[in-house]
Length: 197
Image (cartoon, rainbow, N blue to C red):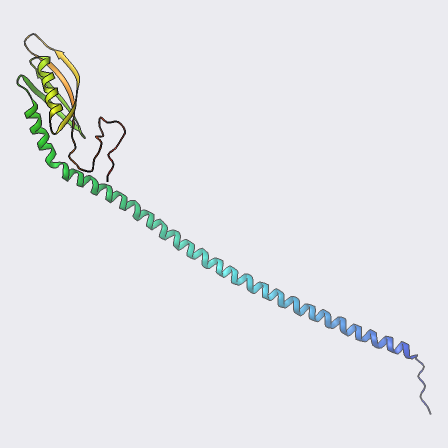
């Protein structure tokens, strides 16, 4: 007996296409899921690697900051030591100068003038004394100006005491600096400081 297919061939073809389409949709969804998972995994791995790099950079930056702080501390200590060494060096160079200054004070002091007090602040010397007359004080000032170790005499006060007791005076002078690297005297030349060559 012959077999008779009661379904039309178009309906079978449509059903076949629907099955194929369903399989294609399922395959596409699975492929899209796999691609999404792969992309997500790749992005997560890249973020993790970047986070590790960032953490490494932060650690290195912290170490560098610590080293920079230590270097700055060393620079500060170095500046302090250099300043101390400069002061010590200046003191060593100026040690013999005070002997010359006292010697010059004795040499420039004319007859009839007596010093009662001598005070030195840096290069500035304050002289208190008694003179028989104001002429003797003028001679003292001229002698200071001509001195090799003293300069810039400035009479601050001169007072005549009792008759025959003489005149009391206060006089300022400046010690000349014998250092070869100093060009300008700091005390009386204004704000200019000697420039080292």
